[in-house]
Length: 249
Image 1: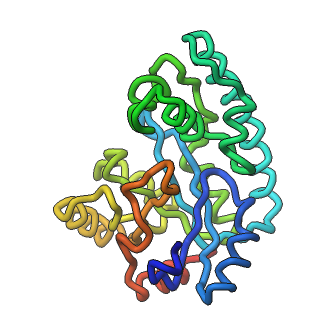
Image 2: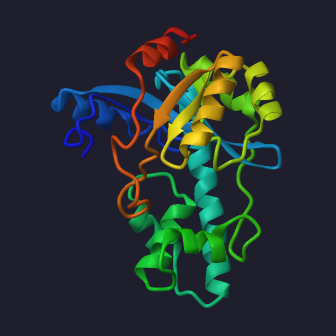
């Protein structure tokens, strides 16, 4: 899909796992594309969930692999609890149902949201989160808490660069961005599907102020999860990509 969209360099940053990168590299070679191996780590910051992206990570680093295994086990336990909560509300869902939707991926709330949509209980994944799965909702279960310091340290240990994902929707402010810079942040996702032009201008100014590399991401999650997002909807300046790569540890 990325090749058909004319993408020449593709970063794959699955949530909390690098298990898909081997297959991604093989597919990228087959289509004459360059793959930037990555990860997206969910962290607890400022009383909410924020996402830190790792680009150019070396998945052979043992600590990154052990993090992957630990998070996968936790996500399965968490999903089991969410399934139990939905079942107590009268929804005939089982953990096996959600696993069938997820395949080999780490279990995550969007998989459960897809089940609710496909069985006619919600009209969209967004509605599933708003009514049942979002923080504080009837089927919500607390996530595994990782601090920004831990995520950035892990990414740097894996020889990658750490950037802040979609700061607009997570409402990152100037002071918080300064705090993340002090913790070792390398860049910030300026060009994103959910960032209007005025917000991109503000984020570009902050990137310059804090010497952060401005990046871009379509935040594509697949047509079943986010049908309104497309590969190539936003792109990154090749010079900025080189600048980001030079910041690798």
